[in-house]
Length: 202
Image 1 (cartoon, rainbow, N blue to C red):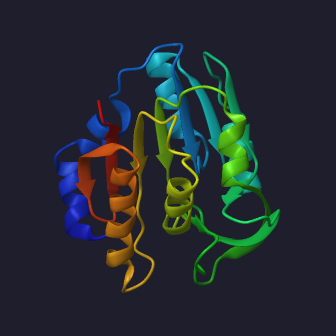
Image 2 (image 1 turned 135 degrees about the horizontal axis):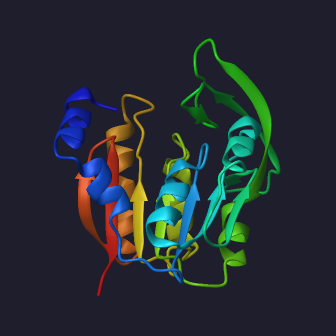
């Protein structure tokens, strides 16, 4: 993340307004790809009573999320998403970050379970009111794959943490944003390498 953009994000209080303020009810469904310890899912569930689905491949983080109490149906799965047929990958991780696409210096690595993204989204047989993607670099492959396979079709709002993983990733970031817009969305907010959000065109 770029410090100046991150400072502006927090100064404007957009971390709350953009990531948590949505038109949701108990019938709504939110999905979190990279749910970590479940804090966003839990907070949203307490605010709106909505249903939720989370995906977190790191076992320790997944187990922490299971300790949370929810007011409605909530599924949290202990796997990550891939764009191929592999069912296991090696992941590097730290206390507040994990990645299938880059090494995190001097930190631990584990083999985690994975599920193909198309298979995962096809299991969800209802509209997704808010899709959050915080996949520590995997967004650069997940977003093109979702666009190519029409996996954004049931999504009404998408919010993505786009990560700085290499010197040339700015071009990839804007390519991903372009694909989101081509999938039928209008950009609502854009803080480069912090958070990006887009809503379904009316």
